[in-house]
Amino acid sequence: MTLTDWNALAQLFYNVTGGIAALGTVGAAIYAARIYKSNSRLERARWASSLYEKFYERQELKKVRDALDCDAGTKQVDALVAMEDSDFTDYLNFFEYVAFLKHREQLKLEEVQDLFGYYLGCLSRHAGVHAYIRRNGYERLDELLNAEALK
Image 1 (cartoon, one colour):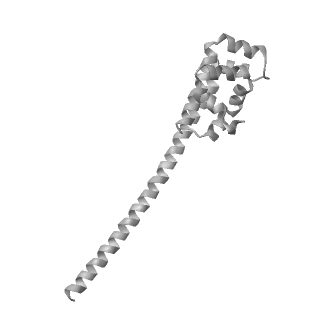
Image 2 (cartoon, rainbow, N blue to C red):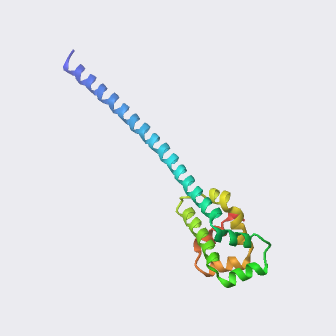
């Protein structure tokens, strides 16, 4: 074998190993993306589970939840808004936090709707409550309530 043959063989070896390395890098990137997606889904499930438990276990949230689960325009809801009771503001703060997590993409809109869509609808149903939300700095919650998907 001549020196030219050895150079051609070395060049071929270099090209093949470079191609294999490139394929390995692409494979590793695809694998990392799958792991990231799986971990993101798992983390969102943890957030959703934690929020779900808190929402249904906290007694003060249950009282407000029951009060808002009625027809629009009731005196009970008007009184709740007028008194600005800490249970009421805790309830709104809970949903402001949910809206924040959705905004930060820790939760998807679909997940928020699946877990809390009915109760977000209850907030929207009462004009006085919705006006209170707009007036008192619950921007993310207002944005969530106005989302087209919740209509």
